[in-house]
Image 1 (cartoon, rainbow, N blue to C red):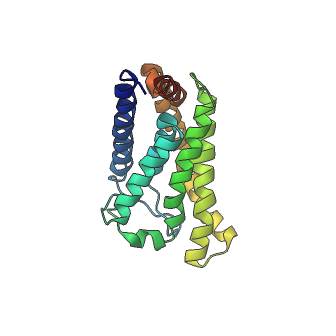
Image 2 (tube, rainbow, N blue to C red):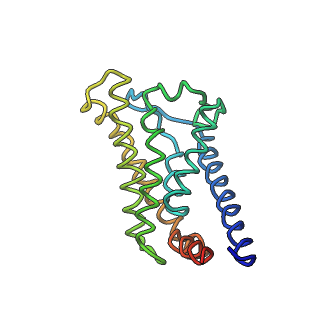
Image 3 (tube, one colour):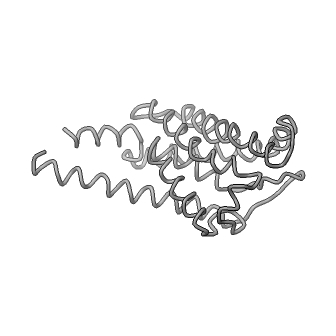
Amino acid sequence: MTDEQSPQRRRFPAADIARVSVFAALIAVLGLPGALNVFGSAVPITLQTLGVMLAGVILGTWRSALAVAVLLVLVAAGLPLLAGGRGGLGVFTAPSAGFLIGWLPGAAVTGWIVERGGRSPSMARLMTACLAGGIGVVYLFGIPVQALVAGLSLGKAALLSAAFLPGDLLKAVVASIVGRGTQRAYPDAIPAVHQERLRAGGR
């Protein structure tokens, strides 16, 4: 490694750490409005899944997953960063635990799909990414855990979770619009562009 390459290699990790920290904080802030339980569900509706989708759209695969991981570690340590001021290890034994755990692969899948869109991911791709990762993957983890913890059948848990769909679809639309606008204003916010710059810095 030459002296010219060394500073550039050091710059990227610092920038990535800053972005990861910002999105971990954003997801936490989106919990401030609180949570809403509907139709007897033990899993609350929150705005924090919007932050998970946005992280995937703007940060890409591994950085979005890391942002969610940072948040979950802080929550496990007892910080009240989830909607309704929840925190501590107890939240990972609650009916909503699967949804929380699902945020991590959900953000990663969202980011992975966006990255496949190259330097100019379309609005349709962003929407698909949010639907597949931010909703599909999160539900894939959340519903079985909810059924197990709450003593419900998978069908009953899925039916209860259907109450989240209208709000989550709206979040997917918002995340896609915000993500597309951000990427147009700041091309560096496009995950594929970031990856290209990392590879260029490593040569």
